[in-house]
Length: 150
Image 1 (cartoon, rainbow, N blue to C red):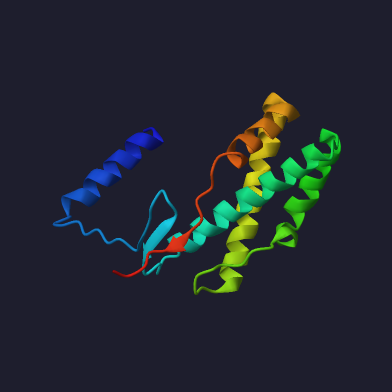
Image 2 (image 1 turned 30 degrees about the vertical axis):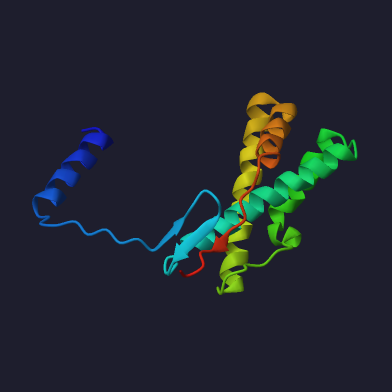
């Protein structure tokens, strides 16, 4: 039996006993960066850490390009950053949250984002990896801000 068949069977068995489905919304993030909700499950904090890590990485790469650094040196620096991602941490969460959680999330997202760039570099070359990072960097970035109560 294939794994997908097994999962399909398990899903069907679980659904047989279900009588209702409840959906709860912990938080919402809108395209303009406005958010609302309790953030009990840290959706907002995760989103902020992810956006900040991607923005910071793209900014570093942009600065490196403007200084005409070679790609070998750039990727060496990124490798060092992946080993100590909070070294680049300049911003802190603007909402009331645990700074340690933010730092942990930021660090993880920075490592993942750098890993993606290394995978692109290995598959398609350094120029494509840099191009990928800069396409996101030069798009407008919404700033997360809490929705004001009406």
